[in-house]
Length: 206
Image (cartoon, rainbow, N blue to C red; front, side):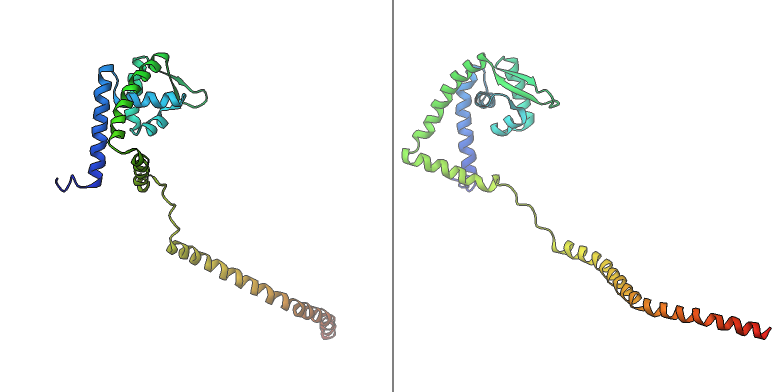
């Protein structure tokens, strides 16, 4: 066994290819591919499913699913209708002919998957399934939203600092002006009282 063949990822890929090849061998004579069969299976379980969601469930790209749906429509196995008020969105349903094909194809595929089950003791099959789900976890979990950068926070605080200082200066100036107001008023009154005396002095001089 080579170094590549000993890798876990290579083993998983090898099993997937061999299983897919075995399914293809029984489906081809019926005129159906593995992706087409999988799509029919999902559509049968979820009538009205969108093409984008169907692609996600069947583990293929939206472009591949577009081709698959086009071929299934030509064969009369599915029907696609536009969804009112949802632009170009289309809902997909399986036809009576598609259900008959799915029933025959599913019987053959289940026989292939039974061979996989026979390779493992009954007690290990549930464990194997759980381990497969566990192995997928690092690649399917949602990404955690990144935390805000501290440097950015400091920059924001720095920008706010001059505004805070300016506000503090205005507040101090207002207090000083408030305290000085009574003194200014008193000075103004004194000046007003002195003004008649000045006028009298001017008249005497004349």
